[in-house]
Amino acid sequence: MKSQSIGQIALAAAAVAYLIGVYFASSPVWMGFTINALVIAVIAMSWNITGGFGGLSSFGHAALFGTGAYASAVLQVNYGVSAWIGFAAGILAGAAMGAFIGALAFRYGLRGSYFALVTLAFAEVLRICASSFAFTGGGSGLQLKLAPGLANLQFADRTVVYTALLVVVAAVMALTALIKYSRFGAYLIAVRENEDAARALGIDTYRIKVQAMAISGAFGGLAGVLYLQLWLFIDSTVVYGSGISIEALIGPIIGGAGTVWGPLLGTLGLHLLGEGAKHLLPNAPGLNFVLYAVVLICALRFLPQGLVGLAGKIGASKKKKESGDA
Amino acid sequence: MLEVRNLSKSFGGLKAVTDATLDVAEGSIVGLLGPNGAGKTTCFTMIAGFTKPDEGSVRFKGQDITGLAPHRICALGMIRTFQIVQPFAGLTVQENIAVGAYLHHHNRHEAMSVARDVGKRLGMGGMLDRPASSLTIAGRKRLELARALATGAKLLLLDEVMAGLIPSEISEIVGIIRQIRDEGHTFLMIEHVMQAVMSLAETAYVLNQGKMIAHGPPRELVRDPSVVEAYLGHGAATRLQEAHHA
Image (cartoon, rainbow over the protein chains, first blue to last red):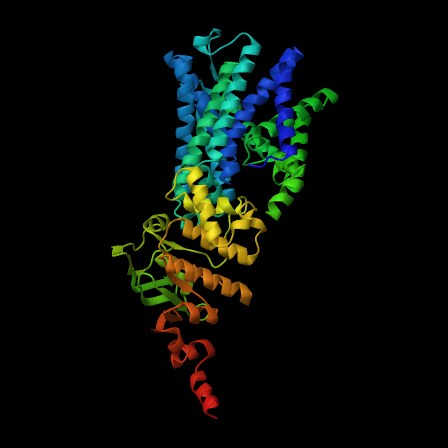
């Protein structure tokens, strides 16, 4: 990462240019679409911590997303707590849920597809619970009162919402970069690459994995709270649904798992592709999901390091030679 | 420095190690020999905390560490390497070494500079920025050693660091190990390459079918009939002697 290739810089610049361009497009549809993509990008960044850096591929990140959203919604709707406190509570609840799932799964040494299945099961159990209990609104979900204002974290102006989201996304990316270049990040990558070797080098791998799940949970809870504040309505089939779990992993995998920019690039790219398909073939609903699947398969086959990895090859050959000679 | 007493381990009906006892004095290089399947690596995994022994005890610097988790043992200053080298493929050589250095240096800058120093000491100065996956076998073996050293461990358990190397690479590693020992480290090494054991180890233990059958200076061990028979089969020692006299 010290030596960013030209391709990677270009890719990141393109994403930034697009995000700034949205301000000038003066198209509410375009902005609304990008706002959506940014919320999904945050859950993708959450997945990236565990799945990308830690190699712990979860198939149930909706469990974290939904827990964050529900924690905040329950507090606001049932107890009249302020949206700001709900915001913090959502993040904490996500972190707690992540740590809980991690502690249980890793206590019993679950890895790979077993871990994926357990996380999927957690998300499903939570979905059923949320649609059964009265305090979570049962099948009809929870609705926040519409009351725009900073105190309620609701904004009538889309541009303000968009700007706030950009700040949040930038903050999460900065945190991701911090993690990547910290002791914790190095340990997490070591766990991904080879857990036995990591243990031999003095790493408490259980602790590292649970901590990763807690951080991922905090990001996931954050994404859930953002979703809630944006739509003011949640129900279990959406926030605990497998759609969220899939969106959480598909973006980072296509963009580049275990990179800072990957989740954002992958999510934006996919959403643009899906949106484009919708406009080209308006009579084929669900076509975007077919496209996602095709892109995912191609990415897994041809781009093991995603878009960031592909871009890394562009303009990097010269650098490599220099360091090789040194 | 290391006292292993009556270590035993069975896997189902198979007695992998029975009653193994060995001592490693501070500053020494001790060999652990034995034919394939003798239980050498099982011994290592028990000493380093990767598997719990059924019976017996392991003491390190006078402290009982039997059954302690590997990361705790590593923090105390004893570390194992792996027979099949296990670099962290996604990281550069320097970052790989830094993973070891992070144990006692929490700051990235410090850990990376420790990693650079260790890398240079092991003659890896020119490849610090290369991805670990691009290293040759010899390079990976060195990396394994460098990573272990970077943790600050004083006692290193080396599991066949010479396996798969060509003679010139072996003599390089032998030189490196001697240099590290002179800097105040202690080694217990599983090794099949007799050239290395003979020139490095002051004493060696021989394990066969899970039991310690001999120990002493390597030069004497190779003449020990029980050791010869462990490798070459029953009756081999007498036949060899007859051939020698004839």
